[in-house]
Length: 120
Image (cartoon, rainbow, N blue to C red; front, side):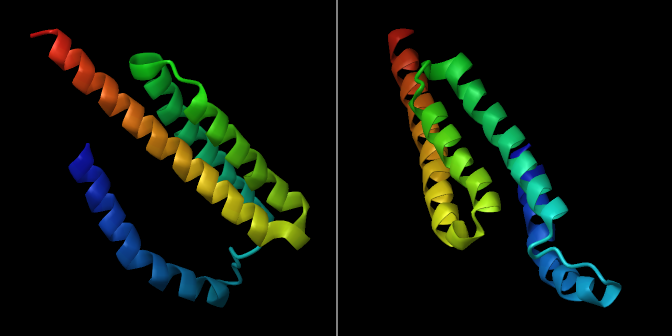
């Protein structure tokens, strides 16, 4: 799974600049495109929720990552409605969402390490 994800990421990184730079030629603008923005917000919600709930259920039972994620997600949605604060809300959203995933990762690995020591 990790290899497939890395390969997809490499292809994405190589082709995205070419694709994005040619879209206006075809009359497509993804910057400040409401459909694209909401689609990406929905995708971020689905992927983030799955990841954090998996960690919560399988590993640590801590609500902290979930609270951080949903607080960040709230700012991500608010930036769509309060355009004058778009960049401030986006910075807050990104910081909270990344913190949620990082904390979830740490909790999952702490539990794995501590549970493996108890089995010996």
